[in-house]
Length: 116
Image (cartoon, rainbow, N blue to C red):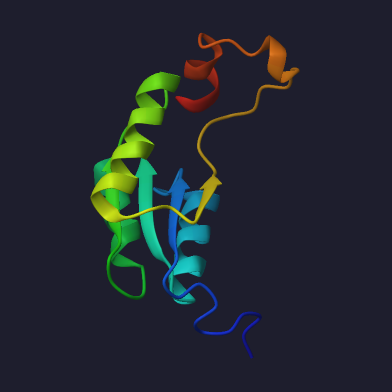
């Protein structure tokens, strides 16, 4: 018995960061299993392709990038939506952790946080 209906995310387009391994890979596999198209983001193209090969369904795509510049990351997300259709959700599993109030977050912190 499955927790979710086989078509729970049918027709949805999701962005999963950190998709080359660990939690990001597991979420990508689980979401694809219930019908989502997945945009797989991570730093290692080879490992992203491994994840891609584990996904059920069609229409998935990989983007190898490091999240070291917030503006470049925003451009990447926009290009995904332009080239592959609007995103219905994002699961962010890339990077490390940095605990601080958002108002104190600076672009310089992005490399430490997202470039893991």
